[in-house]
Amino acid sequence: MPFTTTLRSERFTFADLREVLAKANEEKSGDQLAGVAARHERERVAAKFCLAEITLGEIVDTPLIDPATDEVSRALLADLDREAFAPLRGMTIGAFREFLLDDDTTRETLRLLHRAVPAEASAAVAKLMSNKDLVLVASKIRVETRCRNTMGGKGVFGIRLQPNHPADDIGGILLSAIDGLRFGCGDAVIGVNPATESVEVVSAILRGLDRLIDHFRIPTQACCLAHITTQLAALDRGAPVDLLFQSIAGTESANASFGIDLALLREGMGRVRASHRARPVDWVGDQVMYFETGQGSALSAGAHHGIDQLTLEARAYGVARLFDPFLVNSVVGFIGPEYLYDERQIIRAGLEDHFMGKLLGLPMGVDVCYTNHAAADQNSADNLLLLLAIAGVNYVMGVPCADDVMLNYQSTSFHDGASVRQLLGLRPAPEFAEWLADAGIWRDGWLIAGRDRLLGSLPALLE
Image 1 (cartoon, rainbow, N blue to C red):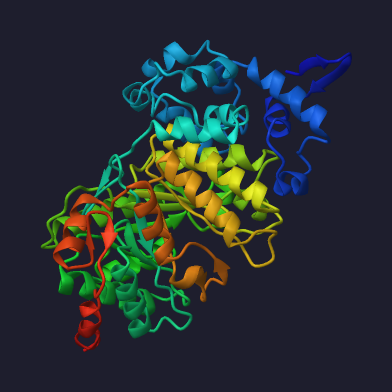
Image 2 (tube, one colour):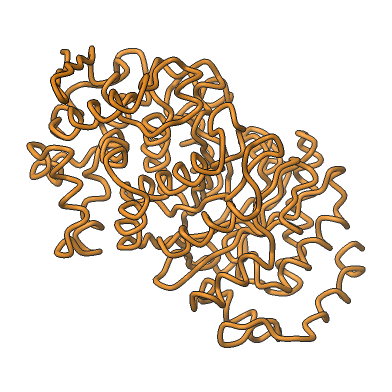
């Protein structure tokens, strides 16, 4: 069904909901690459006017990809809480925006709507919001999760410790991890991206991280961010898997390009939960999944179906919502300037991703990052980092010197996270904060001088 609007006597017609959503999006180089972006600002504004009058019911009743051919579309429809959605069905996207921004719409109100908001509707309303709007609404929402500690509580600002090594050297990984712990990083997860995709390497990394956590009795979880099948093969060989990681996307074909489907994710979740029950660990909860996403991933796989990258990212969050994850994060600038060209687009996308994930009930983190050929720098990363912290982001990354020498991109450093905690009066996960205090690393919001004793344990960890 076409949508039509007139602005200052100029008439605009959009062929269908897919085109309205695409052309209402803020400028993104990925949408331009896909050929779905607005041609100029007048067309973008016209599309926003059309989108504001579309109801949430119309979005649910008009699947962007035929559910008969796409398992993601089927799963998102089946997962929607129809009873909780009923009061929203007749609400326009414009009215939904006003509802979210209203002071009378409280944290508890939004919590009850987590499974009632269609994924595509979270993208639609984001397209009508300013950066400040995205920060304001997201700041109302807290999503707590539990594995070996508790993440996402009010005032908690977590940090994923990311001690990657270009040769997967266990000593180098553990040394970097200990350095990050000295800055209070690692409550979200100590997560390593392996340089080599093999069961042997992944098993060695998982065992090394487990020795570190066990030796210091750290209330946190470890993860090796290999393909899910490699992690499960390591699990079969006896490697300890705290969190099961996988990159996901918003279409069946994009997920297939990653070598996954929903059945594999369900199987993996069940196997890791079963392994937890057999391990002598004091688990705080049974949320075991860790997902990463990123605007542009479906387009890079040739699996975007003519849909804009923001809407596809929202659908990826709908997929994540199916599995009650412990962690989710957008690697917002990692895919490159072909999809998010410069710091303005990266900052906008980071705030959009965090807002949509939180609205859908996800424990959202953001890798505040950019590639070396993007029109961005550490100052722009600082800007997004501070905006996300104010918005209540669950966690960000802690990378040595903000420079990942294995993945060859720029992120946020150990001291960046520590500085944000001090500046805004935020703290680590409660169990982790207690451990940091007992270890003489952190007290009352500040790092403590002379916190080097952890380094002396490295030789014992390598035996």
